[in-house]
Length: 147
Image 1 (cartoon, rainbow, N blue to C red):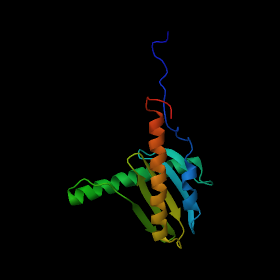
Image 2: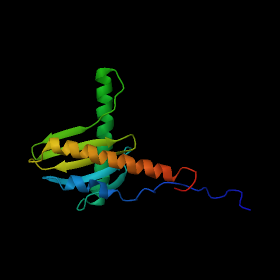
Image 3: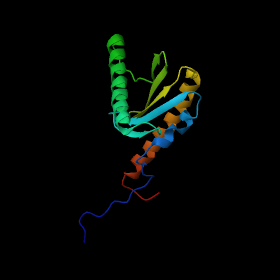
């Protein structure tokens, strides 16, 4: 008899490539690319046309930007905060970074004609989908009865 029987799990396992979560954002006018990342800077997915090396560098920098933004805000306000978005406005467009809970984040790049208000709204909808997918994946690793 096996002393370590396989635990039954419930839930839906996380897809290895989370690029699908970017689809609604990439359909917005002037959104050019995106990356899905863990909060510690690992790539979960990226839009087509983004080389793996660029996705990895983007994920690392976006993770650092969120951490730096939080540290900056906490230092100035002397209170613990959670960053809800970081927007970099450049002459050639925007870079929008949004955390998805404490486990992941999304970063997208746009051209100069992007509607940042519409993007912010759509990103928050996508963030909720990403959080749900991550929660379901966590449940898949939780011992219990199969779903």
